[in-house]
Length: 307
Image (cartoon, rainbow, N blue to C red; front, side, top):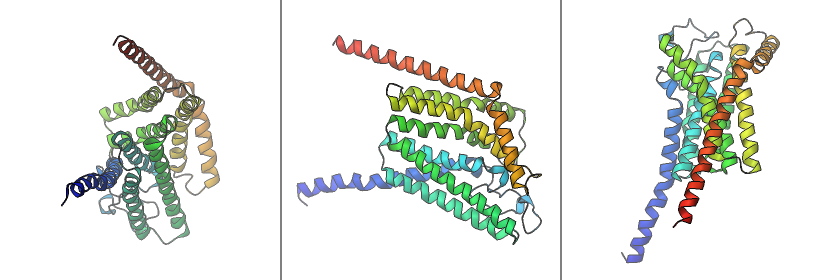
């Protein structure tokens, strides 16, 4: 082999391995996203429309918690995994397409496997079809949101990346909550304390993300306002959805369920004790971070001028 051929082979090997690394990183990130459900034992929650008498230990093993009581956990699991892949791609300069493929393979398999297992056990009724279709729709929509988050975090300018990080931060609280209190367990005093502390995760992360992105351009300033708006509205929306969909009383009353969800949302979004503290914390963290960035930049500038 000539010297030029050896050089070509040497340079080709890393280029071939780069997509493979990206795929593996994407797949691993997707699995990490499912971690709170995996450590819970993966037993399908008891179903109101199950064809046979439901016994927790005899429910099938599934890769996603398909249940009307887990409609906020499903997007948390899927979007968090996609966001982790996006962060890894941006930090490690991995193949975006390969990482996206890795995420979609794992998450697509999880949705299909869970849907088939649930479909096999539900009663043969119209309500069962609608129930399963609704859960599949939630899962598919969550995968699509995760794709957008991954693309923004991995490859967009800082304004776009800030939007993706904001969405991920808002869904990290239910993800951590599912990790602290796995499905089917009863939280103790320590777990309840941790659950209360999780309220501050999204504000701190969103403030840090704003400080990282900066607000010097119009796009970054608009993105910062958008993620703060999300910090105000999204927790109230998640509370409203979980309260309405998780109500057995309203399970067969869709108009009543919608009305109740709207009432809960309005109450949660207009309650100062719930709304203001997270916003204040996020703004404070962003302000401190931006001030630290400015100070560091000026210090570097002076050091460069003296060289």
